[in-house]
Each structure stands twice: as C-alpha cells, then as structure tokens.
Image (tube, rainbow, N blue to C red; front, side):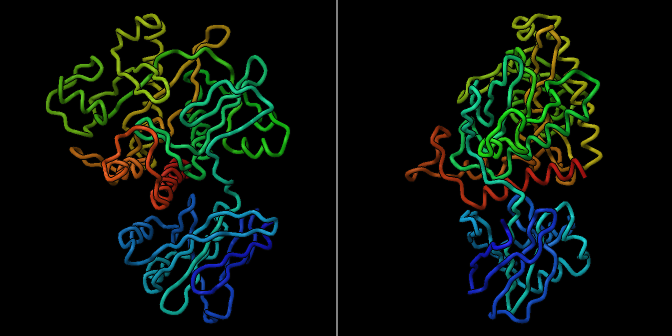
Length: 432
C-alpha cells in the first residue's frame, strides 16, 4: 500500500517512500529543489518528530523549540486513495547537526520499526515522516456484530457471549470530566499495551480479568478488526465493585487540597508539615466512589467503603491494592518514573473470586512523574494529559474562560501532538 505514497510539503519538494522496514516506511526528500541533500537521524514518536533518539538530544531540541524549528501540517496521499495527516519540519541545519553528530548511526533507522528520517538542505532542513504502522485515530468504535454494553469516557465494552467482554480503548481523552472533541492518535493502543505490561508485572498478587484469548477472534469483518487491533482486551465478565481503590505514595491533587484543610486524606491522618508532592511515610489507601460519566468521583473513608461492600472485602481490596502499588512503584523507580498515585478497580467472578479489572497503572489512571523533574513543594510535569489541562485552564469560549463543562474548546494540533508524545514516552521508559 505504501510503496506509492507521495507527500507535497512546503518549498516545492516531494517526499516518497525510500524503504520499507518491517511494514514501516522510511521517507526521503526527492526533487530538483534541493540537489545537495544529506541525511541524518530523526525519530517519530506517536506523531511527533525528534531529531535523534538520545534523551540528551531531545532535551536540547525542546529547549530551543520555535527558535530551532517550525512545523507545518501536510497530508499523505496513498495509492488506494487514503489520506492521512502528517507533519513537515523545517530545522536549522546547524542545530540539527548538534543533535545528530555525536549519536547517530544507521541502525537507528530500524530501531523498534519506527520511521526515522531527516534531510538537510540550503539554509534550512526539511523532514517529513509518517508511520504507517500507526492506525488512524479512533474517536469511537462502532461494532455492529456485538451488543454494546457500555460506552465510557475512553472505552467501549461489548458483550462476547455471556461470560466475556471485548474492551476497546478509543483515542478519546477527557479532562475535568469532559470528553474532548479531538482524539489523541495512538492513545488507545498505548494504554492497552501499558495495561497488558502491568498485568504481567503484577502477576501472582491477585487474579486479573484477562482471558488470554485474542481480541480479534471476537469479530470477523476487516472493518471491525481495524477498530479492535492493538487497542482491545478480551476479558472475563465480572461483577464490578462500586468503589475505586486509590493508593497514594505522594501528596498531590485532591489529596494535597484535602490535607491543607484538615491534615487528613480520606480519613487518614498524616504528619504535619508536608508539602505539595511530598513523599508519604508509607503508601495510603484512599478509596472513592465511582461517578457516572460527566460527574466527579467522590473521595470516601475506608469506613464508608466498608459500609458499601462489607468490612472483609474492603480489607482485602485495601491490602491488595497497596501491594500492587508498591510493586509497581518500586519497578517504575528503576526506570526513572515516580508513580505518585494510582487507581485500581476490582470485580468478583461467578465464584466470588476478587479479580483485578479494567485498565491498570496507565497514565489515565495514575500520576506519573519523571524522577529528574521531581521537587518537593511543586507540581512535577506528568506523563499524561497535563498539556491538555494546562491549555484548557487558559482557553476561552466566546471571549470568556472556559467553564469546564461540555462542549470543550477545540484542542490545537500542538497540544494533541505533545500529549501523544508524552503517553509514548511513558510507555517507552517503562518497557525499555
């Protein structure tokens, strides 16, 4: 399909496929405009082009964004008529040289099967990339062969017989409990990969809802398989517990706000003198009730949780959730990531067995902080939708600040790209 891809980018040059590596395309600039072309390394990470795969180079690039390069929206046209969004980048060649001269090697072109390319010419360089292994963004799945059970903020659940559920993670994103109108390309697949990674890492503590069956086996048409591939899990049908099991290792978010008022979080008394983002003496369990879509979850005490589901079950959920958090947090720290807090969900199977379900330890259900940016007393940058939240805080609708109610303002392309890149970075750091 991709052998005949052509792309028109600014300045009159054309971009065509130069090689296909494991189903992914590498691009090269063609045309008479820039005969003195030379190549160096770049990396496509969830829709964002970096000029090198080293972290030091990426930090240098981010430090000079705007001054060092600019990005232009373009479109990729395939021989079968498909049209997909991509980006062209103009980068000052002297800056690109700084990024690539020390670390680039040809092997980077095949690393993880991602498309990598940068062409330098004249007073500017221009690079155009597209990763055909990344499927088109999915705002909402529309399977007709299976009964829809529920459509949540991010996922759709379909019934597969009487005892299984096909969970599809869309590319929707919600902030302030409002679903954005624009998807984050690749987000659903990344969340699914991360959840599967953590289910494997947490094995042995508590059973989980995975069946081991291929999600593609639940549908037959190619159109529906395209909506399922890489972004779905085929899981056991459980009776969900009506509470969320939140574990906090650091003081942040609503926990920090509550602590400032009372010195407690969900009835758990904490030492005096803690600051925003302080590490707690030990992880604490702070449950919440599940809210309907569009409403806010409500923090509750452990005693209230025991009233809802019973003391014995509440105690088991608390102890297991803390154990899950501790194992995950210890592992993530070895990869340079702090898991400040997270939310687990549990259900009961037909035999009454407590089972870990839904997503687990993704950036949507957890607060991930990079170790190198952590400082007590301030909010560290997080590996999630923080770019979206920050932009929404200053967004206006009809000249007035957005009231954090639907509909949400349209997200700029740059916010979408940065959010996508952050999700990708979190997964790569954890699994490298």
